[in-house]
Amino acid sequence: MTGSTFGSLQVRNYRLFTIGQLVKLLGTWMLFTAQDWLVLQLSNNSASALGVVTALQFMPILLLTLYGGQLADRFDKRRLLLLANAASAVVATLLGVLVVAGLVNLWWVFVTAALFGVISAIETPVRQAFISELVGKELLPNALSLSSATFNTARIVGPAIAGLIIAVLHDRTGPIFLFTAVLCTAPLLCLSWMRTAELFRVEGAAVSASEARTVDGLKYVWRRSDLRLSILLLLIVGLFGFNFQLTLAVLAKVEFRVDAKYFGLLTTAIAIGALAGALASSRRRNRPSVYLILAAAILFAGFEMLVGFAPNFVTAVILLLPTGFFMIYFAQAANQRVQLGTDAAFRGRVMALYVLVFLGSTPIGSLIIGWCAGHFGPRSGLWTGGLVSLVAALALAVVQLRRVGGRIHVGLRPRLHVRVHETAGVAAVRPAVR
Image (tube, rainbow, N blue to C red; front, side, top):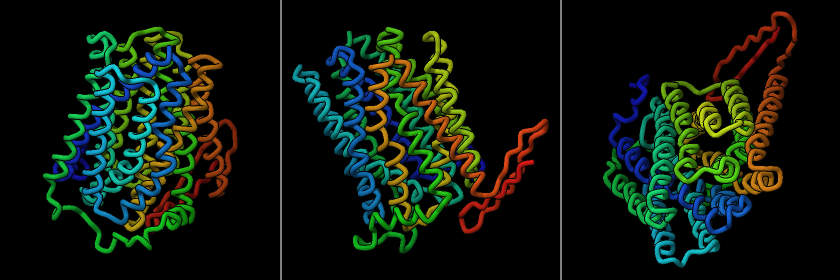
C-alpha cells in the first residue's frame, strides 16, 4: 500500500478529508479567478491594483501564520478547520451579495481579500499539520503528494469553469462568489463525519499555551541546517517566482489581449503541469534529498523565464506545463523534507513557518512583481521572478557543496559522486566531485 500512487485514499479519514478539500478548493480557485477579473474591471486593467489585492490577500499570512501554527500545536486541529471553513463560506457569501446587488467597489474587494487572508493564515498551517494525523508515517509522503494533487486538480478545473461562466454571463462574477460559498460547506460535512478514534495522534505531542511558544519553533528550525536550507530557498522562490495569480492575469489581458476563458486556459495549463508534478512525487517513500530540491528549483526558474519571453499565447500555454510541473515538484519535495524531518511536538509551528515563507512572501513579492509589470511591461514580472529564483537556487547549491566540502572541477569528464545517509532524521551528505 505504501508504494501505491493512491495508497492514502484507502484510509477512511484521509479519503473524507480529500473529498472535502477538493470540493472546497474547486470553489476557491473559481473565486480567485473571478476576483482577479473583477479587480481588472473595476480598476481599468490596472496591474498595480491587482498587485494590491494579491498583497492584501496574503499579508495576513505574514502576520498571523506563526500564530496559526501555535494554535495547531495547542488545540484540536479538526475543530480549528471546522471554524476556518465556516468563516470562508461567510466571507464568500458577503462578496457575492455585494456583487449581485451592484454595491461592490474596489475597496470592498480589498476588504474581503484581506478577510480571506486572515482565514487562510490560520487554516493553512493547521491543515498541513493535520495531514500527519490522518495517516501513519509510512503513508505521509504519499498523503502530502495527493493533497498537492487535490489542490492542483482544483486549479485545473476551477479557473476553467470560472472563465466559461464569466463569458456566458457577459463578464458578471457575482454568481461565482455565491457558488463558492456553497462549496465551502463540503469540508464541514467531511470533517464532521471523520472517526476521531482512528486519527494518528501522538501521545504527549500536544503542548500547553506556555510551552507552545513560537520562538521555540524558530529556534528548532535554526538548529537544523537541513530544514534551514529548504525553507530559505522556498522563501526566495516564493517571494519572486510564485506570483502567477498576478502575472498570468496581466499577461492574458494586457499582453495577449484575450478574454476571460483564455485567461482561465493559462491558469489551467500551469495547473495541469502542477498536477503531474504532484502525482510524480506521490510514490516517493523516503525523505527527499537537498539536491533533488535544488535541481527542481533550478528547472522551475528556467522555465518561468522562458514563459516571460514566449512570443505568443500558444507558446506560453505550452511552456506553462513544465513550469507548473517543476513548481510543485520543488514545493512538494521541500514540504516532504520539512515534514518528515520534524518532531511531532513542533510540527504545527514548523509547518507554520513553511507556510509563512511559501505564501506569506507573496504580499511583498506581488507588489514588487506588480511594479515591474506596470513599469517594464507585463512580461517582466515572469522573467524577473524566474531570474531571481535561478540565481538563488544556484547560490544555495554552491553553499551546500562548500558546507559539505564538495569541489567542482571543470574538465573533459566532470563527475559528481554523492553519498547520502540519514541519521536521526537529519541528512548527512558528503559529495566528492572529480
